[in-house]
Length: 485
Image (cartoon, rainbow, N blue to C red; front, side):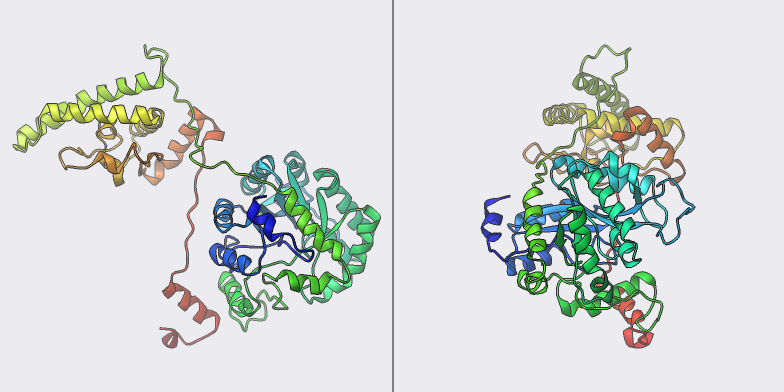
């Protein structure tokens, strides 16, 4: 842990939030990252975990934001776990068993972070059924470097305690400890003024003593301050398409799901279970994940054709570019002469292409251009419509010669430096539009050429702008449309 965090976590009555949802738990939490960091500093908390529901969308943003504010970040997520097979879409459940349970997982190190990413991804691609689920088999494969918390009342241990099935609660707790390893599993104890929590607390303490699995105190945070609870209820109404007066909507029975201070947590647990509070600091010390910084992207190796005499990617890149240069320049030249629009000489084109090739090789991106060139060529061979190019890539004569774009940058006085600048090294960003009917075929082709592990798709998040938010809130409050307008 960094020095600044060590200075903060030194009080005998300190506390670290290990069960907290950010607004990346989409429409389930209202905690934004920068306000969270500000609030943690106000509370003099030197560390905090993020445990979003079923995803790690905000992991990097959380890590960077907390670091920037001098707070030790703990990356985790709240998994949906089924004791059935994750591939099973039709539930075959025992009596009294739920289709899935919650399990909080925290990364101790980089290996743990990679395992979290594997679990979160495969939960969607292999286990999705109402929720992105993992199963015991998957957890066992990717258990290294992880700390597990039993979860709140939706966790398996709590569930069986509320069912007065102490034996099965013990079995589940021992199973998790066996999978994660001794000292890597904890039983969560919470106080949100709920009857269910009071009912099972004695059994939870007894289970902890019987199995020698320690308790850890958590507060299932969904919003920053206690007076945000009303706004949080509206968020759930919007998510469910219901109104505040709908008896079937999800309700949080108490306004206690906020980022409590250490003093508040010690008032709740200090007399009864002080060790459960100290355990939050121990777990924080155990979680020492350090994510690599800078440009860590490793491109797959472009396969140079065997019939080519080129030995390196750089040589093949230059060969392909110059072949394209000859074809493009001749056609451009002929068209300009026909239209009497000749603005630049062949020497101008030759000087520009030389500069661009040297810059791209110097920056280490020939492989990137070849990869893009190859799958665009494949799409055109399969008669899949491809866009003419847009954005700053249209300023590259190399992209034009490779037929990645169809805009002559010299003819339109477009700057290559807006696309690639050796003084500010960053990955090239070439925006390409494929027809929706052939897009999947192109993705499959790239997967076959470079391997499944080298190909992924990215997600974008839609946010509620002011106007849309006001309308949604008005609808949830059952306000007349005209009044909302």
